[in-house]
Image (cartoon, rainbow, N blue to C red; front, side, top):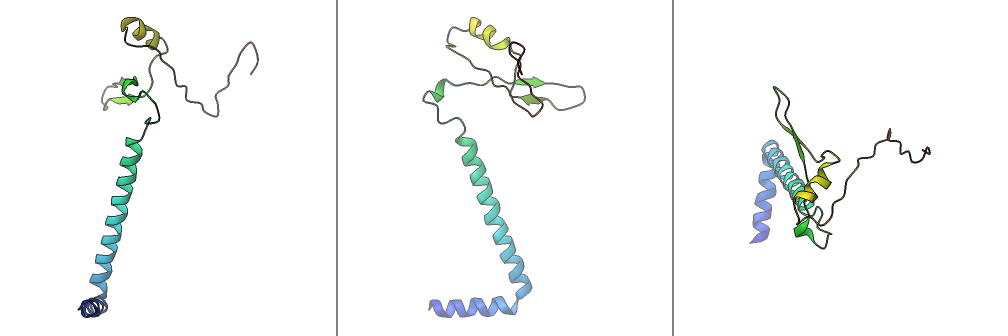
Length: 113
């Protein structure tokens, strides 16, 4: 029974090559896009999950509003923001700062680069 279905499917595939090729390309693209979406969502869901106290972890962001444009959100704040917020809220036990390093960044300490 299955052999008969396969014979009919192959016969129709070769009879209507153009339509079959379009269907096959569409199916392949659909699977590829679904796979890419799945891996993107999996990566986003796994972000910072290695912390033991993930439920107590927060990140401050800054929203920039320029005239005539959509607001832009950056994952950075002013340096004095963390100590100020820690003084205002007793629930904050500690904080850290992230500094994006670029090729042009030079660290200087006591006159040494």
